[in-house]
Amino acid sequence: MAIVKLKKVTLCGLRDAKTQVLIDLQRIGVLHLIPMHTPLSSESTECYQAEQVIEALKYLNQCPNKRHQMHSSDQFDLDAITQEVLSVKSSIRSLSDQQDALKKRIEEIEPWGDFQLPGQEEVAGLKLWFYIVPKRLMSDIAENLIWQCVYQDNQFAYVVVVAETEPQNSAMPVARTHTGSISLLQLRHQLTEVTLALEDMQAERESLTRWIAVMILHLNEATDNSELALAERMTLYESGVFAIQGWLPEKDLDRLKAFADQRQLAILIEEPTSVDKPPTLLDNPAELAGGEEVVNFYQTPAYQGWDPSVAVFISFTLFFAMILSDAGYAAVFGLILLLKWKALGQTEKKKRLRFLAATTIGVALFWGILTGGYMGFSPPPESFLGRIKVFDINDFDQMMALSMGVGVIHISVANLILAYQHKQSSSAFGSVGWVLIVCGGFGWWFLSRYDNQLLIDTCYGVMGAGFAMLILFSSERPFDSWKNFGGRLLDGLKNTVRITQLFGDVLSYMRLFALGLASASLALTFNQLAVQVYHAMPGLGLLFSIIILLFGHGLNLVLCLMSGVVHGLRLNFIEFYNWSVSDEGYPFKAFAKKGGR
Image (cartoon, rainbow, N blue to C red; front, side, top):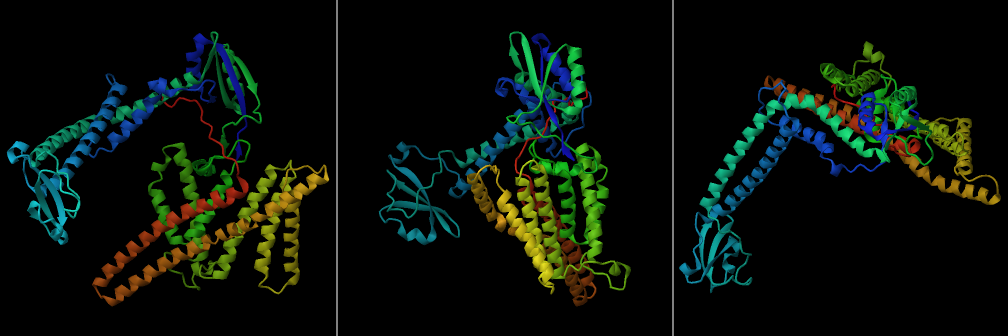
């Protein structure tokens, strides 16, 4: 639940040992390399090999018909097969474009018929000019022109004008159409040739699909070679000596020292300075690491910041549950997850996301039981499920207060975390001031419905204390002079402008209630519609009712999933991040082997 502390490490050795040292470092896989020399990837085709293999694999996997897979790689040349696949891809794309162009051209020429333009000597120097004229404009053709309508449909007439020069714009109501000099018969012959060539290329692509399994086996090796080539270009060479620099987690320091001693390398270990921008390596328990994946997907926090993974994990599960607000839908999602459980456990990343999904669905199921939602049905009050129902989704006042209360807690936690991060600075009290303001304001709003002036006055006092802390401690200026003190007050007053943003952010959490109510209302509507159809059409109505229920609840499930994910993440990455995470970093990427050989 923290950002791993890193050391800047520099290794130096004799140039002759450079390649072997890089290979061994890649095998160890603990360093995030720092470029000491700008890697010019355009100078080395090896750096593109992995990308080309991935592109070729994607193209072969998209082929609808695949051949029996080859498993022997004794005479397999990865680079040659990759280039062949990419060449076929380029040829198919080019032939497809030609085919589309010819089809379009034939469609344009067909109304004119199959003809060959005559030579000028055959028509005494006259030329043929082609026009597609709307029928309503036929009367606008100049009377002195010699023309013939060769084809017409419901809207247009296809007119050929015989003249030595192109008629002036005033003589014809529309602009000239360019038919070209290639006849319809020739275009059809070309289309046939291109179609046959395209079929041959498609067959060649299908034949190459036999290498998919072998290419996948060699993909990690290609990736390792590409990263090794890139690492060599990031290494500094000077007077027969090479230097490699990178970021190293503190826990791996002893391991790298042992490696340097074994390879007789000089090693320099430094602490990150204020000028450095180290990468961010997050460290979370396996059970909560799903939040880490979500955080890195949106914005990796800066190295000097804090790890919001656990906070995002917890809040996302809660927000998704409140947006879903239906135990029946949660049970359906749980069944789908169980069916995909094994497939989602193939990689470490998938395992993390699987646990996040399982936790989210479990919380959603529990919340759905508390709200008494079961695919639009509510249990009778005297039943067991009715007795354990705590919240009523249709109680607007209760759900609005609950949603806004969750928002107040979420934003307060963000500010308290920010205050802890700046605990060495007086600006931490400014963040605490925001907490007092938002809590006092919510307390005043919530308690104003009750006749208790003491509690309301207490809320006023809390808000006043918050504004005082905000004005006094929002600046980094020292308290060493009246001038700086006045500047601090001015900075604090400027910061109070964010009160409107705070108000808007708290109101944003009302979407938790609004979306939950919307999904519940849709479910209830589809249920009522199915019942009405069933009673209105005896016999056949049962079939239609089942169709309505399947379609309606299926649609609502998709909408709930989209709303829960999108808005559940939005409240974290917009409102929560806005008050707690400011600087963006970049992820730690270890220089490590991916292949098993």
